[in-house]
Structure formats: C-alpha cells, structure tokens
Amino acid sequence: MAEVDVDPITTLIPGIDSSQRHLGFVWGPGDLLRFCPFVHVVRKDEDIYSPILRKLFNESHHIFVGLQNMKDDVPSKNKKHQYISVSKNYRSVIRACMEELQRVAVSTRDTALATQYGNQVSILLAVELIWNLCEVLFIEAAPAGSLLLHLLDWVRLHKADVDEKAQEVLQSECPAEHQAYWDVTVCYILQGRIDEARQILLKQASQQPAARVTFKLMDSLLMKMPIYNPGGTQTLTEFDVKWRRWHQECDRCLQDNSFASHPHLELICKILVGDEDTLLEQREHLSTWYHFLVTRLLYCHPTVKPTELHYYAQASMDMFLDGRSAPEPLDSILLAAFEFDIHQVIKDCSIALNNWWFVAHLTDLLDHCKLLQSHNLHFGSNLREFLLLEYASGLFTHHSLWQLAVDYFDHCPEFGRVYLELQIERVPLDTERKALKVLRICEQRQMAEQVRSICKIMAKKALRNNRLGSALSWSIRAKDAAFATLISERFLQDYCTHGTFSDLDLIDNLGSAMLLSDRLTFLGKYREFHKLYAEKQFAEAARLLLSLMTAKIAPRSFWMTLLTDALPLLEQKQVIFSADQTYELMHCLEELTTGKVAPETELSMQEDNIEATKIELLRLALARNLALAIVKEGTLEA
Image (cartoon, rainbow, N blue to C red; front, side, top):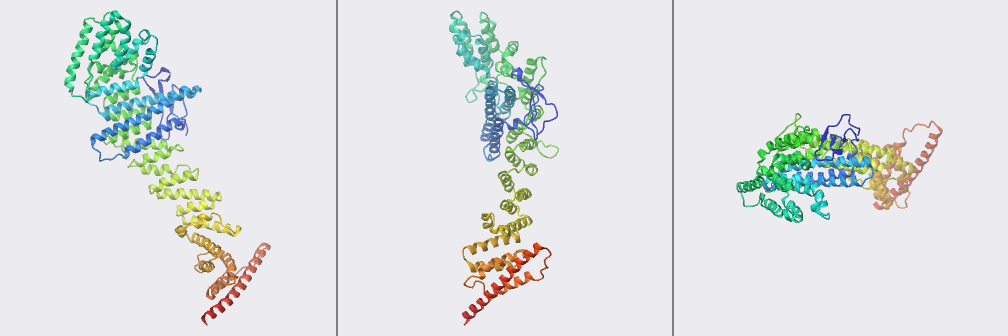
C-alpha cells in the first residue's frame, strides 16, 4: 500500500495537549489510519499492522455481527435497551484500545513511536467523544430532565483529569493548603459533582473555624441543590419549581454578600446561579465550549428539552470561542449532533476524519435504530451500505483482516455480493491453508465461478511443484475434467517410470470423483486392480484388468502395461483366465501389434527388441493358458 498523494485535513481536538492537538488523518477504501501531527507524515499502512488497533477491528467485528443477528420480534422497548448496550460495547472497545495505546506510549523508549501512539490515542479520544454524544442524543433519546443527566455523564467521562488532581490534593499532608485545592473544588462544581465538592470543602472548613458559618451556608446550598430523578415520583414540573426556589435562594445569598468575605465561596455561588461572565472566566477549567454548554445548562436550564438544545449549543460555542479561534471540524460535528442532524454528523465525520471504521459502525447502529431515513445514493445503495462497503474494502487489503470484511459484505444486500466476488479474487493464495479458507467462504455462498477459479489456480501451482496428489485434489474440487485428465496422465507416466504410485491415499479414496473423466476413472480402477492382486483375489483382478481393455477405458498407449500385468496371472498354477477371456486378451494383443512401424534409430531398435520379447512371452503365456483353460473347461463339462 503506497502513501496517499494529498495533504490530510488537519483537525483540532479541544482539550488535548497542545503538542498533540492538530491531527490530520486519512482512512479511506484500501487505506487505514494515517496521522499527521502538524506536517509530519506517517505511512498509511503502519496502523493497520498495529496489533493494538487490530484488536479494535476484531472486537468491533464481533459486536457488528451480533447486532445483525439480533431478532426482529423483540419488543421496541427491549430493542432500545439492546441498542444502547451495543453502543456501549463499541465504546468500551474504543476505550480499551485507547488505554492500551496510552500504556504503550508511556512505556516505549522510542520517541517517534511514542508520538505515533499518542496521536492515535488523541484520535480515538475524539472518536469516542462523538460516539458517546450520538449515543446520548440519538439512541438513548433522553427526554427533558434526563437529558442533562446524560450530558453531565458525557462531560465527566471525557474530562477526568480532575480526579487525578483531586487524588494528589487529598493524599497531601494538608489538602486544604494544597495549591490545587480550589481548582479541584471549582472543577467539581463545574461538572455538577456536588457530593465530591462538599466532601473536599469540609477539609477547608475544618482549617478555618472563623469561617465555619460561611462554609456551613455553602454546604447547605449544595446539599439542597435539586437533582432530577427519572425513576422517581416527582414530575418534571415539580422538579422545575423546586429548582427555581433553590436558584433564588442562591441568588439571594449572592445579593446579600453572604460570601463576600470569602472570594472562593463567592465564586462558587456565582457558578451556582449560572452567572455567564463567571463561567466564561473558568475557560481554563472548562477547556471546551461543550463543557461550558453542559455547565451552563446545569445551573441555568436543567429542564432543557432536546428540541431546544441546538440554540444553547450554538450560543455557547459563540460565547466560549468569542472570535478567539475559528470552529474546528470537531466543533462542527458536535454542533451538528446537538442540532440532531444525523446525516450532517456522518458527512462531517467522513470528511474531517475519513475514518471508515467509525462512520460505518455508527451508521449501521443508527440504521438499526430506524433513525436514518432512506438516503439513497446516486448508484442505488443507501448510506449505511455505502459506508460498510468502503470500510470492508479497506480491510481486504490486510493479510488477515480480510476475513472480517466478508461478514460486512454479507450484510450489504444491494452490492455486498458483487464487492465480495471482486475482492475475493484479489486475495493472494500464498498457502494451501489460506486457499482453503477462501474456498470455504466461496462454497458457503455458492460462488461457483470463484470456487473453480481458486481450485484451478491451486491445481496449476501444485502441478508446477510436482505435487501431483494436491494438484489432482484441487482439480477434482474444481470439477475440471480436462485438468483432471492431464494430472491422471502424469500419474500413469510416473507409474510407468517408477513402477509405483505416489499419493496412494488420494487414489484409494477417489470414490465417485473418479467419474469426472475417463482417464481418472481408469487411474482409480487400475489402482483397484493392484489392490485386488495384492490381496490375492486373482479372479476379480483378472476380470477388472480385462474389462479395462475391452471397455476401452484404458488408453491404448497403456495396453502393453496392462498385458504385462496379466503375465503373472497367466503363469499361475491354477487357471485364472477362462478360454473366452484368453481369446479376448489375444485379440487385444494382436490389435496392439498390428501395423507397427519399423524402427528408425538405434534407441528405438533397442526399445522395439524389448517390446518384441514381451510380446513373445505374452503369446506363449496366452497359448499355454488357453490350452489349460480348454482342458479344464472340457473336463468340467464331461
């Protein structure tokens, strides 16, 4: 696989370390991930050979197949839970791969390799961020009230650095005096993690007895903060009324200057009332506009409806960026998701990420959820199938991942079969084991033309290597009568040269396959003659030998060999051939010797002398056997 000859799109991922923020990556048909931090170009075929990323492809393949096999008769409510479970399984695979890449990046001493792994981590982080949001908005489709809870979980999952700082603070000798103490406290508040915030504030309250009343008041406000419980008996309206009362109480405390003596607590109170200027001042802690959005909703609009979400998302992005930087592709993707524009999300991901793994699996899941309207493309396929075909075509370029691609093609009803037929012919048949795998795939799908093609290729390859048994086996499997005849001829030539057969197991177990061609039939029957002779079943062996000649099954060039094989039977003490059988043998011998051309060279003269000797011996043996047979048969009649 060669390098692509275009510059990759550069994608800015907010919240990522500045050294790893600008990431362009290409992953198209026949291509896998290519990462380009700044202008650095990595060969696009490196990542598909990464054992860690191969786990992503393998594990997601199992999830994909399970999803396709999901029963249609499951009630809609249960189906939704199943789809959510499938989505979480996909995300768990992404996260597991991401964590392993992170471990390897930290442990490796190769700087270039560490950078490459770090870039992969960043990209998978962005992929999981988008997927998680799509799961919340499209698959779970949480209503007002529950929606904010899901968005809070989404932000917390992707902004987990506060936990590391908190652990560092709490493990210090005096947590309340740690330089990161208030940063951690504010981050907890911004993420809506009220219980953790209260716990850490107790550390400070115990250190400041004089301010105990102030800290107690803040603790009371935090404790009273209403949290919507989707499974509870409280209606959304009742929650909204209770929340507004609490919000007014926070606002009164702020207006009364209850926390004026303590700037940090006053800052927290301003956050609780949703003061936008205060929230924007916390850009460093929020780090992204979508974290700002969720925090703003938490403290200003906790009962936000899905239909209202895009207004707040657009406003929050404009406020947070404030003209300081232009929206990046990731921002556009997330904004399209908040606008519930599924097709735009898929389109933007295809352009910005060119990541067929992501868009193919996400689109497939959304299609199963009946969330994608029929979106036919210009050539008749729908969006789901188009993306799956592109992804599977890319897998087919890898020496082992191509097997995964087969299942993806199987579940593309429009063009999957055509794509598979075209791609399967390009798989290099390096070994017989691999050829058998490809053959099994074709046979299971009744791809007769491909089966014949594979068998012919392998038969010719085996014949070139003088592996006659393997060549014959492949030609039989291909039902290629002409090639089976050619190989049977080679077997007979080898027998004439060496006096023995190779690959006896194969010839002994031809069964009905010997009917593929006359020459193969003769080969099988001739081997059967040798077995009867070895088992001393002389009468049966004699009948079979004669039938091979009289039924014209044996090639004329092989008659002398058969007649020579008859000599030991003619010279047995007991009479094996009857008089009639002996006459038939004599007739065959005369037919063979009639019209012989005179020898022209010394070598041919020597060969002719040997043959003449054989003929004389045969005539003598036949005459003797005939006399004995006549006497025996005459005696029996008398």
